[in-house]
Image 1 (tube, protein in one colour):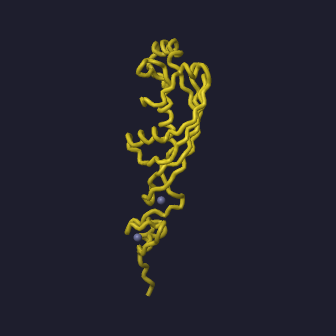
Image 2 (cartoon, helix red, strand yellow; image 1 turned 90 degrees about the horizontal axis):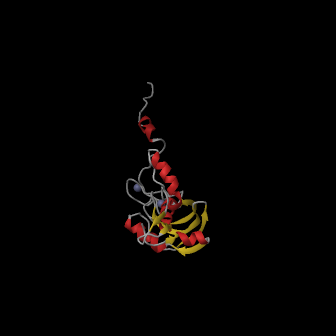
Image 3 (cartoon, protein in one colour; image 1 turned 120 degrees about the vertical axis):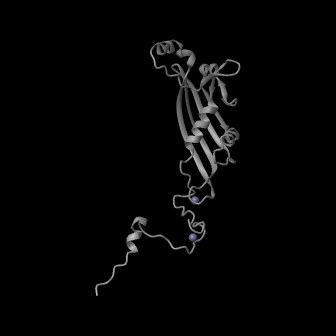
Length: 189
Ligand SMILES: [Zn+2]
Ligand SMILES: [Zn+2]
């Protein structure tokens, strides 16, 4: 549980909230802590709308900004645009108590998944920080590439092929066919 961005649930139930802030300092701390390979040195703008819905809170928001990642092909730093839209419903565990008794009666019991939790003072709070961290991780590309056309590094001499070319002989065509190319067919006498 992150201490930051714990929002009292009773305030949200009273009236909808719109929040706009820069979460880069918060996300940077977590990225460092969990050794996520990204550098955060630009703002990461969050815009969130929170409103009470049925027995919980509907969270809608966007996360926009730029992070510096390492390209998977050429190993150079590059700037990656982050643009995420998210929407999640967080059930209020206080309203689920009757329901929970029923679930407990019939095994197996599955705990309710929600980001509405009790803080250190036993107040019901929405852990917006946990939502933002998860959305940030989801927004990062699985295979970071500086460009779709990144030429990568020469596996033989290590030259960054985006910046210059090298004289290493290129393997052409399907490598599985290389063995066939090397077969010398003797001309008939
Ligand atoms: Zn690259
Ligand atoms: Zn080379």
